[in-house]
Length: 369
Image 1 (cartoon, rainbow, N blue to C red):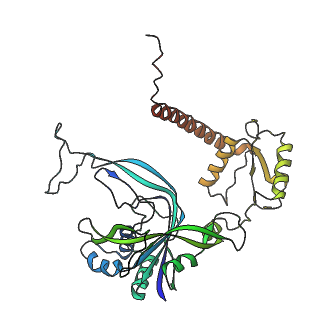
Image 2 (cartoon, rainbow, N blue to C red; image 1 turned 120 degrees about the vertical axis):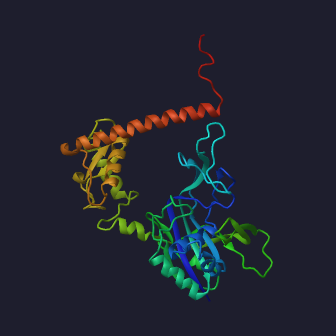
Image 3 (cartoon, helix red, strand yellow; image 1 turned 45 degrees about the horizontal axis):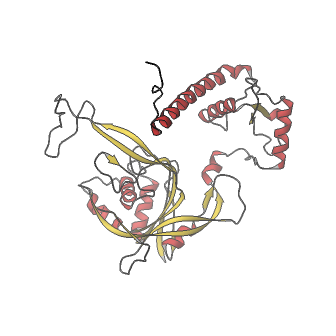
């Protein structure tokens, strides 16, 4: 049996680059070993002067990654050093050749959006214990690859003992943010490190993400094996904490379908806020969740429902509900509706421009001179 440390890496943005080139900074689609060990070093407060001593035992940890939610890849545009300049390797500040002003570094950086991973680290019990202690009370804030990538859940997910990394990844539940059948399992992709000393399997890949030093970029190789693991489904403890104090609504139940239809009929299938055709039914209270009455609900069009929901998220959805039929709240909702309409018009304009560029269209080609 080996000692296991579990990390849950979830957030709106993550970036785990192992193949970045100059101004093009890409991300891998799962956490790199150098990124995970860097996270642990931050928790331990290991600065560059003593990082080598702290890093040495961490490198020996074997790592497996379970991809609970792969997320989406996207790009962002970055500038660095504007008005200040970028340091040169030999010292001093880089200057733009034409203006002799401090140079600004332009780069495109790739991120994983809305992804979630379970990382299992296997190794010496003392090392695992020190890592867990550091994550319980980190010296410096931890982040998911870059400092702008903040975790949305506690990173430390526990410790355990298992015979292998695959068994460890299968032992932790797969959290479902909704209703599910008890006893079900989920098939998930995983990337598991192959222990040195034996011939790697045919589908193994060689990756260079084992940090040798933090003084300058230097990484050693390791073999990783793409795998499939099977984990039991369970209700997310994070969602349960957020939803504490009310029963969650099963929007697939017959009871909800009946009361939803009754409320729409009661409002003549019109939005109670703007009198457009209603498409949604909104809760103004969850006191009777699962056995709603007509007064617990309001019929809304999609844009008004989005506005009410966004206001509730911004004001704590559990304690401050928005009632679109309340005259006191009308001005607040109206301002949010106008914000949504403005942003969606801009989004539509951008989509049209992007599609025409992709098709190489010119709207002026047929215009009279």
